[in-house]
Length: 453
Image (tube, rainbow, N blue to C red):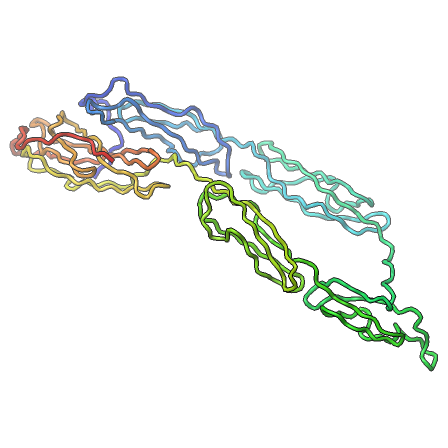
């Protein structure tokens, strides 16, 4: 089997081809690089007007590099040839105007002395083409920062002089005076839980005095002692000077962790939402619509909530946007066969030939596939071939007596739901032998037609 992608001018001369057939190529393309290898570029190249007198298109276009290839940085000339012999080209230029992506610290604070503090930080940059690039910051990491807020300015430049810049703030906090003493023991204390075990509470007991031997009483001999971990709920602290209550409460809602807004080209969208509570740990999150739902095209608001065991609740939301991708890529014919691929003897009869085609498409699972034309290296007429079904035809087992044998080229088109079309051909031979050649038909030819999808 031989795949034939186009024919020379001598072959095309055997058909009634529109003299005004023209190849249509895209204008020069300029694309932004998406990685060190350049960018994948898609384009459309076609031929119009090349139909025979029955309205069947006869012209296909093959380009190199093909649409969907990875084009390197710089300018590449794309050479195209139509099956009618017409040549053409256009240029694809891949450029890099994207600056590196800076990864800088968020604004942060450090505790300093009365003069300031030595501050270290980590700043990096990554470029789509060059990979890791150097970062220059002022003041640099390890510099001494004065009390107050200072802006750190950073920049990174790639090999094509694309520069990114950014900044972050460093605040040096001066030493703070000691906190005021806790409330006296005769006032009951309420504190917020800091974890599942409760909270650490400190207190002082004024006027504790001495015991009967003159020894000072530390914190009035209180139990539980100041600095103990107090559980959720109410605890009575008993001291030599009296009693008071410490109550640990949980009024803090869970922390809700939701995804950023989601854009999807599929209607079925999954996501992860979680929540953590200081006391209860991980808690259940309820979202509407739930993860794994089928979302309508457009933007849908997903609303989520979580509650802990004490009824503290929190809410949040994010958007899910479904965008349908436009299909501009033609199907790909990966393999073609003809059964039989040799017609003998050359007795002039019409022989049924079945065409086998393997086609893949990035969107359409079952694009239309069918024969739309038959050509040959010898002069043929409409009576020499007939389309029975999209992939079932009849070819006449005949050849010129003075030739080396007839080679039919059966042309097949693949068209997806978006109307994108690709064309390939497969050869069927009527070989030359020592027997006589019969060119007159031995049966009435069927009406020539193009299969309709």
